[in-house]
Amino acid sequence: MQKAQLSLDLLLTLIVAIMIISSFGGLIENFRIDEEKLLVQRQLNDITIKTASVITSAQSIADTDFYIELAVNKIQYVDEKGNTHNIYPDIIVIADDNKLAASTVISTKSGLIEINSSAYISKTSNTDINTSQIKTRGVLVVKNV
Amino acid sequence: MYKGQIFSTDLLFAMILMILCLGTIISAYEFNLYNQKQDTLQKELKERTETAIIALTNSVANCQIEDPSGKFISLAYSININKITTLALNPKILKETLAIQDTNLQIKLSTSGNILAEGINTQNIVAIDINVITCNSSATMKDLNDCMTSPSPCNNPNIKMQTLSLKVGQ
Image 1 (cartoon, rainbow over the protein chains, first blue to last red):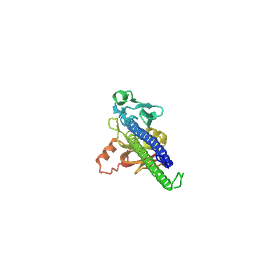
Image 2 (tube, chains in turn purple, red):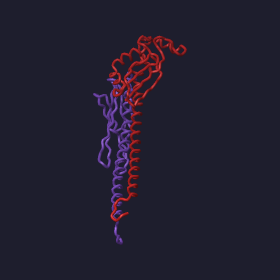
Image 3 (cartoon, one colour):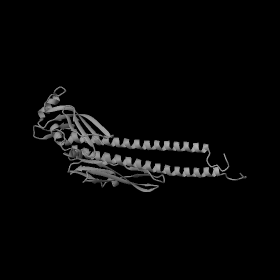
């Protein structure tokens, strides 16, 4: 070894350390995106299951002139820049499949990701579900027509 | 160490230990994630089963008893044995009406016995027991009044108090 010479050991260690740190960075980012997706998925599932539950339970009051305004929770998530977002999900009724479907789009480092959730519903033929007021008033209306 | 030697035993041991630690951390994380997902599925199925039992005992198969004026009174948390036995002949339609068509279903009444007994061979199972009033299609308002005023348990042949067990597997 000469004075001020870098050893092969040190060079190799540095290369390995840089590789490990960069792979850790990628891994942690992937974990963060997975966590965020899971968190949003749980919020969305919670909304669909609770809403479907109200619609299905409404069968027991189908012989009355009922009008239900169900408050829909906002989905909360943190984007890749650390900003917190609160958004209402898109909810639609798929009549042919007797399903209620909800979806939302979140922004992550790997781009925009759409997250979906659905739940089975059962309702009488005279029960009407109106999802048009979710974005404006945050309510879903279930009523007898 | 020899001149030009790249790997020492120390380095190899350190690398093996680091890989082991990394593997343990990642598998612990995956295990935690799996548990969270299972927990969510279990909670969702529980909520759906509770909704199904409300729909079943309050509208789909509940007792409708005619009052003296000719009006039918719908009894909350009740089961019409004749109605549920007929519905159980077509489990697909029954499950669709209860919004649990993607599950296997078992319905049992404590005295009347099995109403529907589909095979449940899944990990995710929810079972709920509730006390309900059961009636047959010939139950009248008089039977109901007799039952309400007589000492418990009611001995009326048309109206009984039973435990309804609903078991759902997904």
